[in-house]
Image (tube, rainbow, N blue to C red; front, top):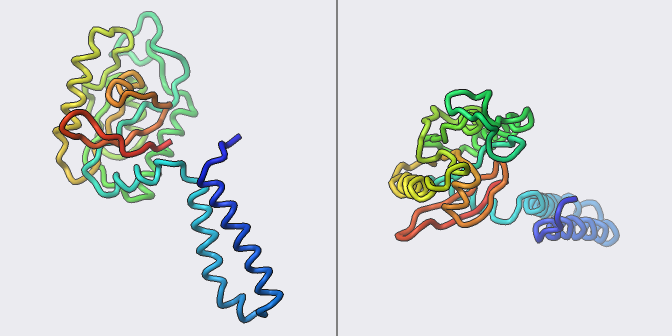
Length: 219
């Protein structure tokens, strides 16, 4: 069941208000008033529906990406399981935890959302893990650059500080007008923004003198 958000409350309220206004105009104003007010009614309904379907923080995230100069930290799409199997090898995808069919479709849909909104992507970088590379390629947003700084340290926490520092440097050095897309892992993103992230979720950030500012999330 979808959570009852402020957006959904506003959306349903706008729809009820528009319907009530229409009934009053039919009763007291006649059809000519209905015709005159119809554009206003439609505007109320569209605004309410937009708020109802877009989660809090998502509007700000998309706006920032459209402006350019921001970084989209994306966790790989749905890949059921935790960590990687015994016998994991970086060069052999069949030894790893990989995207499910649903995860592959999820990645394609996310890429479509970028294109539908006209987001200019300056570069796409990815962890060398197959589930991240596959996610990044299925986005269809440009050439994917395998980047060790984005590799998971779930199995080896001794790598955490070095990889987090290297990933932060990638973000701070980004000065292109477009968006930098970084596809990585939950553990890496949590270390950067001090919070959890779901499969296929995007956290939009911008650098500041010390650390990162989180602009919003895209689910």
